[in-house]
Length: 211
Image 1 (tube, helix red, strand yellow):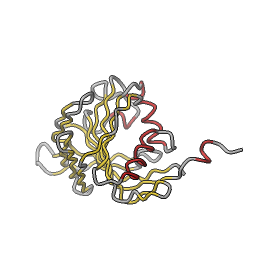
Image 2 (cartoon, rainbow, N blue to C red; image 1 turned 45 degrees about the horizontal axis):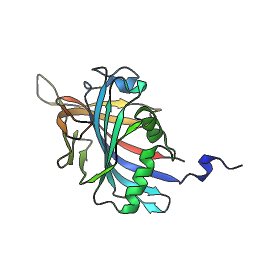
Image 3 (spheres, helix red, strand yellow; image 1 turned 90 degrees about the horizontal axis):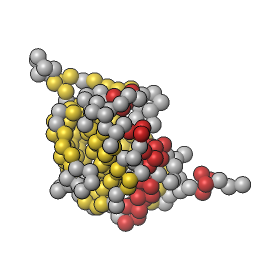
């Protein structure tokens, strides 16, 4: 007998992830603790270096997500918005929409669909992502909608870069991430608007699939 999983479109995406949120450096959420302020607001973007959704290549596709929760993430009732880069083809946008739905498998998308049931209509806009994990530098720029600038954490005495990592051997989002500083971020979207300054940032590789 066939199951739903048997007929799902096979997919995989891998590349670089950039994230900024309102937690202090380290982000308690990464350790199954409550967010620094008791709630979470975040801007993330992905640069897909290798990707496939069925017969559709997702190589080079960029997309972003904006999240907002009224309380701890695990309590749910969050709001999410996906923004797909305007350079993506119609088929690629449809593939990202399918992943975003959380119905085609893959732990990341399934989990966030569950804790973020309030899904805003997907938008299309220029999604510019720059990342250098080794240098702790990154940025996301979605003109008119969202922007974040990320730099290394600085030693308060010497001013030198302070490098730190989070390692999650069983992590569903990443296995290892560089921790950095969101020097400033601004999101101006109805329903999920916020500003961040000197808060948590993470830079990591990702490799997700429904295999």
